[in-house]
Amino acid sequence: MTSTSQALSEREPLLSSTGADPRHAASADHQAKQPRPARVFNICLFLIVLIQGANALLVAPLAQLKEVALCKSYYGPGWSLGRDCSVEPVQSALEALIGWQQLFDCLPGILLGIFYGVIADRYGRRPVLALALAGLTVGTAWTQIVYPDVDGLVWWSDVFPVKLTWLSSVFLLAGGGPIVGISMIFVVASDVSSEEQRASNFIWLHAVALMAEIFISSLTSMQLEAWWFARLGLAALFIAVLTAWIFLPETVELHKASSNAKPGDVAEGTLLDGEEEDDEDDPVVLNDDVLKNTIWRRAIAGLMSRLQDLRFLWASRQPIPLALVFFVGILYRSAVGTLYRSLLGQLYWSSIEEYLPQYVSSRYGWRESQAEFLLSYGAMLNLILLTSILPGLSDFILRHGRDARTKDLWLARGSAVAMALGVFGIGLSPSVSLMVAGLTLFVLGQGFVPVVLSVATSLVESSHVGMLYNAMAVSETIGKLANGPIVSSSFHAGMRVGGALMGLPYLVAGALLSLAAAAVFAVRMPLVQPNYDQDLLEESRNE
Image (tube, rainbow, N blue to C red; front, top):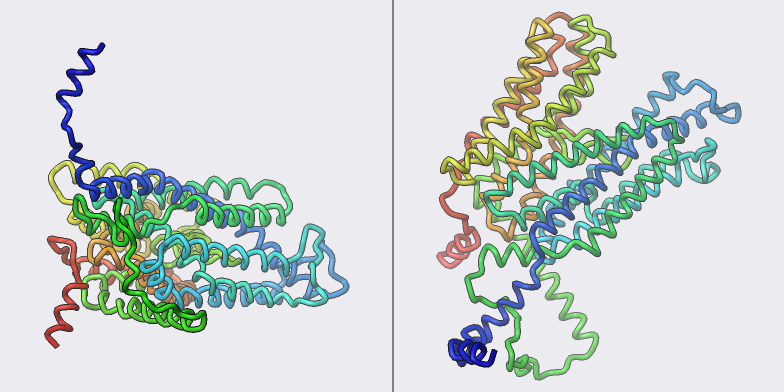
């Protein structure tokens, strides 16, 4: 035993190579404290389940509670739960209430989305995400205060009119609402994903959201009072806030370290063993007023410098076509409450889902109950695409020698072409079989959103990912506001004319998606990760 230990000790160096340089020890401690990517991504999946689950729980109950509240207001003292709420005045008021609510819900994200993206790049993703979810939770709670309870009585009916539910949008100013919240989840997933796995991880986030929506939407068909589901949805949002704030680690430094650090580097501000913080630069002791003034000036100056980072998006040029893609091509399915019905969104699936049953019934003579089957078919095919086809295709391309950026770009191009051709097929098909083929082709392009996000990430520097994602989300929201009325008016115009023009909304959608496809084909991937910070610095020096 002694000889063995002696032999081992003779082979060991007198000074450990790691211990000889304290910087290696500090770097090792820093790496040990870094969050594990797999754990962080699992938390992102859990947050998506909570948010999408809450959304699915809230859609139908809030629609019912709104209708009952308006019905009670319409009939006045003679109202009872058995009264007919399908009369035209009630439904018109409901449509107006929902339409204005959707507009107000979009405004916080449009006005503050890029601002919160800058904050996330500067100070971290977790506080912005938690704040966005907190504002969403409080806004949802506000709608449930104004809406009726299980007995059909408005809690504060003598004080609050139903239109005060619009004030729920004010709470979305804190954090930017679901637009910023969902963007932050994708930013966090991007921070902990390698370039090869980033698109696949985004696809899985979409797949989990779709599974949560399908599963929980089936639960809402149970014969329970609407307020039960509304309270469960509110509870799920509250759990999401706690999860984001308590369990989700900060990843902004992790992304910076993975992008910029070299082996053996120590994070800025790290003190090594035996070093003491140098106070010689701060010989003057400031009073409280001067100190507060200095802190505020530094904070404002830092924030303004980050807002100037918008120049980097313009300097890069390449993300601009992708932002236009989101403008012309993405429609979030708006819910009747403070949430979007599909927070992760799918290209024009909202228009297809909303109008497809009536379109198939009018053009091909199907009953609407039969046409509803096509929606279930599309949802299941979409799930297979996201969980099997796209991940398998991605791995196949990587195994055959293609780099991740090229793979993502060609997947995005293929998805855009599939959607455009599929929508044209739906609008032009003279028979049901060809229409189903067009629908199938369209659904096979539904991986476009996560893949385009991955492509856009490769086009900017890592320090601007939060700003980029929120800028694209803002473009997306503006596109939703612009495209929704266009598709709706084209649908009603096609129905009035009849014949082959019944497919007019799908032809309009196909034209817009063709623009999106052209924008994606205009993108050229750089050979290396761009450094627009350095480029602009050189420009300023030359000036």
